[in-house]
Image 1 (cartoon, helix red, strand yellow):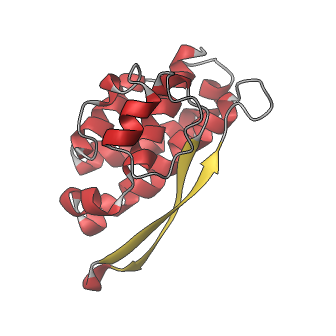
Image 2: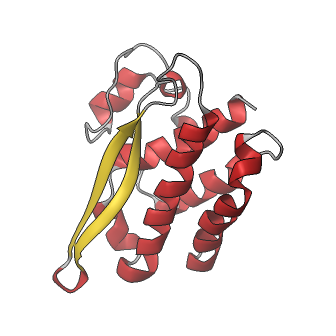
Image 3: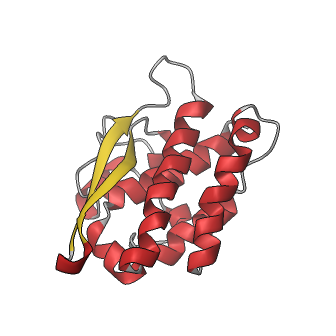
Amino acid sequence: MNTIDSLTLADDLQLTGTKIIKKQQPLDAERVYKFIDSLAVLDKPISAYFTMKQEDYYENESDKKLTLQHLTEPLADMHDRILTNHVDGYVQNDEINFTYNHEDPYADDDYSRKTDFHVLSYSLKVVTAMIPVIGADNLKTKISKDAILSIGLAAYNLTKHN
């Protein structure tokens, strides 16, 4: 996916957010998955992770930012998300730091579309803003795999709970 398509994805989500949250408009999850796969941060296409057991991901690929509590369950059922909320540093010195926080769309024992949408849209806004600044190849070395997985999980669950 080229830079313009990436930036418009984040912008389009911002424009349609309320309708997606209220189930008045479906989320184009395939467009999100295409973006995630184009980043090549994860070892496999994002769709391969939804049925993967949490333990397999944790042992083989995770950068240990996610809290995995039910290791025998699939990743799609995981409640923890990593929200990419900020980036700072010095581009000229190749010192870019993303910051993250945990979000749980099931915090009140009910699924919160708003929380997953926030993880999806806000993370995409931060990530896509950095692509023209540092380039997609450099982004791969700076961004958390767990954060990218969380974007995919948020999109998947917004579609699943539609």
